[in-house]
Amino acid sequence: MKNIHISTRKPLSRRAMLKGLGVSLSLPALEAMSPVYGATAPVSPKRMLLVCYNLGFIPEAFFPKEVGKNYSPSPYLEALQPWRDQLTVFSGLSHPGVGGGHPTDNCFLSGARAPGSSGFKNSISLDLYAAELLGRPTRFPNLSLGVNVDPAQRSLTWTRSGAMIPAAQQPSEIYRSLFLTGSEAEMERQIEKLRQDGSVLDAVNEQLKRFGSRLSRSDQDRLDHYTTSIREVEKRLVADEEWERKGKPATTTPIPPEINLGARQKMLNHTDLMFDMIRLAFETDSTRIVSLMIDEFNTPALELEKDSTDTGFHNITHHGQAEAKLNQWSKIDSAKIQQLSRLFETFSKTSGGSGSLLDNTMILCGSNMGDANTHDNTNLPILLAGGGLKHGQHLAFNRDNNKPLCNLFVTMLQQLGIEADTFGSSTGTLNELNS
Image (tube, rainbow, N blue to C red):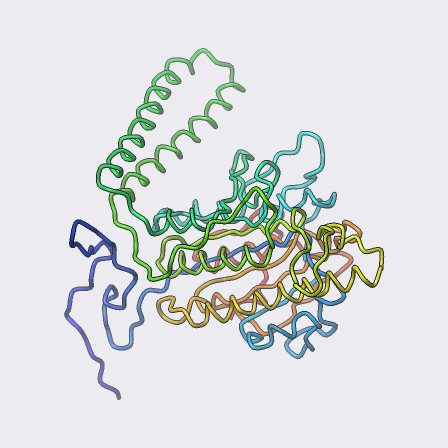
């Protein structure tokens, strides 16, 4: 029997600080922060990255023909073969009752029905739902990011009350939020602002108590919903004040260049910068939940130098079987898949505690469009990589009577350690992913 080494050293506190020359930095996650008992591994936070390409992929080039573990890769998936054992491709998944073409991108993480109807109200998105239940173990409960997103119309992140959370799109601003700390005076000003916001909520609460007894039952129900929202804001304000007093992590990565958000950017270049920010956010344990909407609808097809065109990407997806448009779309899709392969490689080489970031991060990549050419929102192209799930397979469900995508979402919530049996339109889980 092998000897078991027991260490009596006291683990470093996650709040341990480095101080000098008037600068304070919090330590990144280190093995010394975990107790040592034999081969006990450092704590490995579970993370989730959710990526939506809102014009999707050419279906015939995306989906494999065979099912199960012995599937032959489709033309697009050839580039992902190095990650085959850590990747699952799905067919036959969609959100029931979520149709109408492009407006469905706002429902990709919620599954709320009939987004194109009058009076539509979205429901809470997967990223925000998970962040709420995980609490506040990190500075940012979640990050909602975007590439070329129309901030007035689109986002992946929605609250319980159906309010849209705009996506952050400037990589340099995300970098500053993650790593740059203001002076002590600036920090105190920010804390005072948080306290002032809290005092306003206190005053509102006092008024509501006096006002509530005079209301009808239905109005009291509405008021209860409103006060619940206020309590949630109060909790966030307290947490924000605590995090404001803590130093931010350090990085040797330089700040990314400022991009002109007023002009339509090349999608792949912008996405590379966002993937870099996501890796840094996970690596420093600044957050554990990230969503990224890549708004191809607002993207020019000026992607590949030798095949550049002045037409928009949206126009190309309505190809009508025209060979020239299909070739242009296929080349851009292939570049997107190669970009995902580089992301998986980067995550596989980055420490995430016990194992790599890829080992400990579920990366969902997909689309709200099954076929943008026909505005079809069924049989969605979905990939899931990493996160310690049972991969290496093509899980094919009925393409005419799809299984709810929210079943996959419930499985992912459970893998995060969240006790959830339902989400959105779910009817169960995908047990095929359990080890």
